[in-house]
Image (cartoon, rainbow, N blue to C red):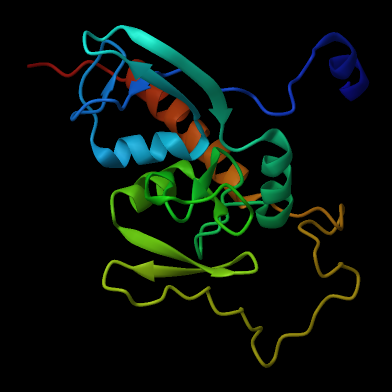
Length: 214
């Protein structure tokens, strides 16, 4: 099945997102032909977007159409993904819908390199730009996470088995099922599947529910 899919479908290594044009050349940043944006929205878009500097004349006429600059490059995304593998927020670990975030914002002079980039899921990326927590780059691709009051967010402590527990020697340490040892459980994907099934069942029940007399 995998060979068939690979042969008939050209799957890109990184799927591009929908194009959303943000104008940041005025006092009020805004979407192209759309509403105004808050600074947090602009900073979030800059993390993995494309920038082009456009110089205009006094009457708004374009005088220079600058080169497009993509942040970050595909090669750099591979480096960050191989290092992080999931959302780096302690206790998250989500592996889908990940964004490459600039720890020091681009608008504040942040660089695009492994010491300043970290993977965040879309939920935590939005929360960070809204000021719900912060990240500090400590050099050598090390980062610390802090609550809004500045206190550090530690990783969850390792779990310890009860004193009277004995492992089953027939099951590998990293196994999920005895009949299929060695396969790890993808918690992020599992949660999404369970939520989809729950939503589908709720919709089915609502459609087949008996009408209530007024």
